[in-house]
Image 1 (cartoon, rainbow, N blue to C red):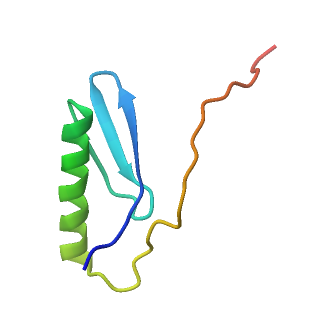
Image 2: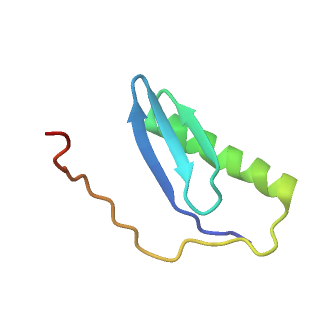
Length: 73
């Protein structure tokens, strides 16, 4: 059986940080591919530790976009 989750990857200085939206699991890597692989492993370990009952799955398409707001005076 497989479960579908959503990952968001951001770049922070010299690292890519991968975050599983549904579970709150986070990992990192020097490349996007490494961050993805590390997140997959971290989620598998999370599921082994905490079980698989009542897990939220991805609910569908997620849209992310950058935007700006004015701050200060």
